[in-house]
Length: 126
View 1 (cartoon, rainbow, N blue to C red):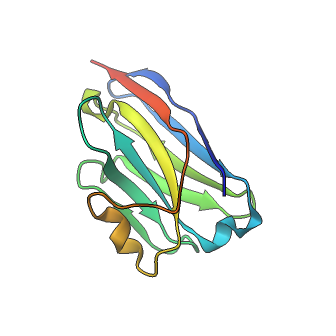
View 2: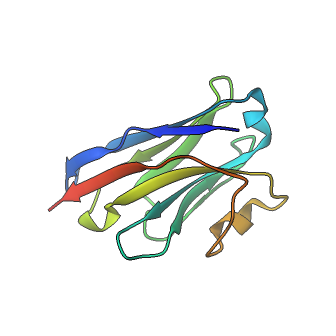
């Protein structure tokens, strides 16, 4: 599966961005999908995940209530709607696909997905 992330950019604090991640295969619908981010000098961290059906979602505490993950299996695409952005949200955002039996494992530090997108830069100015 090849993943192509897009939608990053520069936004002021309090603003919004919508990230998209398009997958190359029709088997996209069989994968749990997630978004991760990595800020300069920091480890990559979990942001959000959604089950293959879209029925379950998980969020990092730092983004709960501000970010929403969704997917459209007909379009082989997963989205991350980011509202009320803060400077500390500045990072490179990566989408990932995983064939794990337990989606909650995607929240664990150092989780290794089956496939990763190339990353898209999000910069939030204060």
